Amino acid sequence: MKVRNLLFVLFALAGSYTSFAQSNLLNAKTPAEIGKKTEAQLNSDNDKPLPYGFVHDRDVLMSKTVWELVDLDERINFPLYYPVDTANVGKERRSLFDVLIKGIKQGKITEVYADDYFNTKKTMKDMESSFTYIDTIPAGVDEINNYFDDYKSGAKVLDPQFINKTELGASYISGYKIKGYWYFDKRQSELKYRMIAICPVAPEAREIGKDNPDVIELFWVYFPAVRDILHEAKAFNDKNSSMPISFDHLLNSRRFSALIYKEENVYGDRLVQDYMKDNAQNQLLESERIKEKIRNFEQDMWNY
Image 1 (tube, one colour):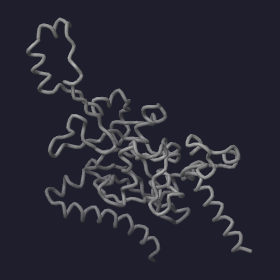
Image 2 (spheres, one colour; image 1 turned 180 degrees about the horizontal axis):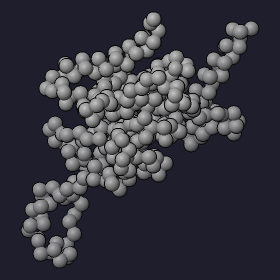
Image 3 (spheres, rainbow, N blue to C red; image 1 turned 90 degrees about the vertical axis):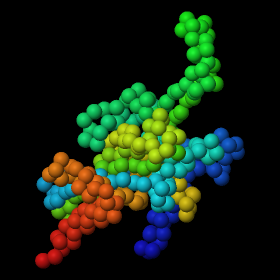
Image 4 (cartoon, rainbow, N blue to C red; image 1 turned 90 degrees about the horizontal axis):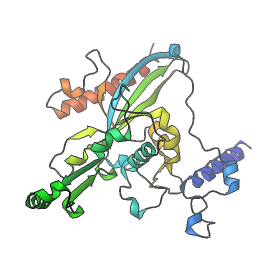
């Protein structure tokens, strides 16, 4: 009896996940109907992110805030990066950056900040210079110099062919910085992780095309405020396309590879590279040491 009930639950979950990818794909009579759920599906769906449980401050026996870098060149992190060209894929497939930037432009994501301590808010207008760069090509400069008086008086307007417009897209995102909170819940006797903020890292639009461009933090998003939007957007599942994973699930379950580059400390939360200078191997070892320090606390709780 228990086995039959378990199988029923598994099939029910599989059916709900199937509706995430391309709803109504097998029943659609026209391409426009693909992705649109039927009235019965909408009535039966309870499609919301799993809410965080309440944690009282006195139940937190130990905590540590860490900052990590997710390198999108690593294969395990590809679901966060692709697709970068959205012209050749369906509307249901977008990269994490596209989901975030679209939410900001539409006003759905408002908890956007300039730093990871949430001191200064950012708007899309504040970030326009980072995402778009407009410059006059050398031929355009020559054109202006040759007909300077005409352009100055407004008699002539520079032709668009002399203007180079560069826009920052998903393909230029090199990684994500994430701020997270490790804590030991003494009520449940368990070490847990809660993501606090996420930040895409990329060169500014004016740096695109240069050798070894400097990368910057584009914006920090307060993660709990965007969980509903990230739950609606699905990352590609290479093993089973009918069961995609939401970005909210992917990030909360830590299905990515990351390297700790900073932890909260007495030195003003200094970076690992500030005290492990010019030695990438020592920086990597220090990152692993911080991880082990957090893990060892949980292990020590079970030693008498």
